Length: 77
Image 1 (tube, rainbow, N blue to C red):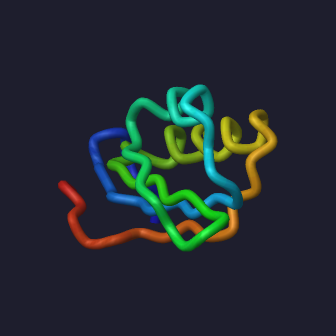
Image 2: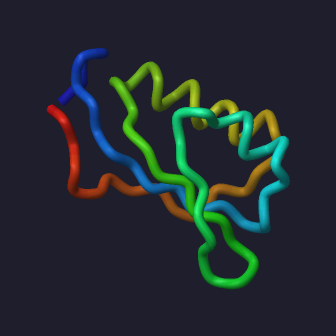
């Protein structure tokens, strides 16, 4: 099912490493929290498939290793 821009879904992203303030600032729509040693958890609402793809491209452009991505309860849709 393709989501529309009006569908908001909460996602959790786990990336390898402890992110710098600059890297965290690249994702203003996400909240960074500590994860197990050597990882950072970013959580937030994503509006539609296009925004999700753009966010994944940002992880890639910054050279971040995304080790897990999942939907979590708390969607507004």
